Length: 318
Image (cartoon, rainbow, N blue to C red):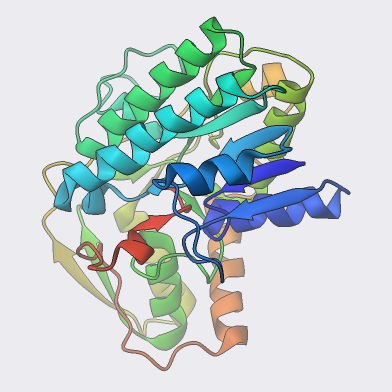
């Protein structure tokens, strides 16, 4: 039995579905479940761990902008709650393995692209620092005998159930509704990875962890960068010119350029991305069109932090 924390988010939903499709028993844990389960509630977490073989830990304040808006909540959720999970796992009669979700944000701004996993970590914001602290907890768990690995996700996209203000779903929605794409830094460059590729890679890492393999942190990346200006261009071309583009200043606490080296994932797990941004964007736009969820005013920028904690503590990654 595998426990997936943050199971209702973008990555959580995808990995739960994939594991079940492959015959794996899964227990979900999310504040948006019918019976609300909060990662910051030690009693709820202890109960959820009962009888569990392993944990995929995705629950977090999962957005850079939200963590900047409430650093204390971000730290208590992303670090303190994970430390409690590690302690509970170490104390369990049958110690569960752990796969911890980190982020490419831990690299900060690197002078050389593409970035490999051995790069010196240079976190620029609260969210990134919380993920560096989480990776340190993984190392501590391993030192104390727990089977644990960390994965760094990079700009994951691909579902209409994602946060609507994240850049790829926002631009895709605008493309099919003749909306506005608000570009916060046209030269900002990112390595966008499709959720199907990410779920497949995460499954491979879970299998490796179950087999007792201890890996250095691995990131799932395409190795190809796309600027926000280019992404806006894809949206505008797809709309046939119906999209209006607005330029905005980039945020000071965001990483502005990241492309990753995919070699470690290929070497250690046999994983490589198969869905490029053009194909993935088109698929997402088609999904928005098919779902007919275009009745709200379209927008395409990074939004302010949500006020309710229930929305904050979700599983989708930056």
